[in-house]
Amino acid sequence: MIVEFWLLGTHRGPLKGLPPTGNSFRCRMNAFFIFEGDRLVCERVYFDTLTMLRQLLVGVPAEAVGALVIGLLGQPAAAPKPEAAVA
Image 1 (cartoon, one colour):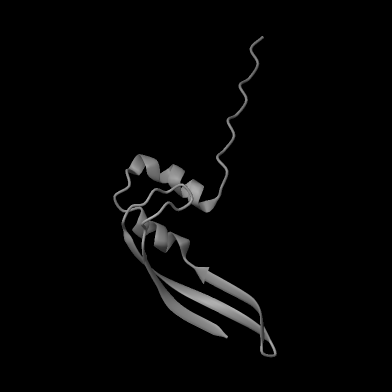
Image 2 (cartoon, rainbow, N blue to C red; image 1 turned 180 degrees about the horizontal axis):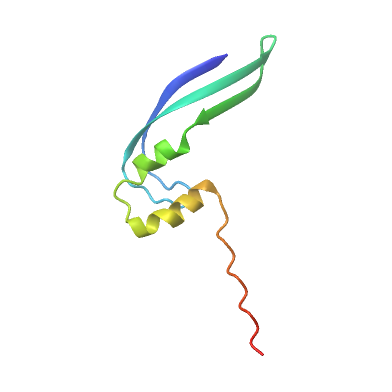
């Protein structure tokens, strides 16, 4: 079974390091429900993260957006390059 729907909400609490902005969002979602007979064995939900983030980040200072997006997407920050040894 496939279900398509709109997720609507307001950002009122922290989201993986992003403090509440109070911004509303609307994002189209798809959910896939896999059954074996009459038993649900798997549920998969898909949505466009960027669509949601663009709405949540309205009003966030531009210099803070990069770090917030990296935190939200779970990408580790790049490790600093070791300095070359000076002889």
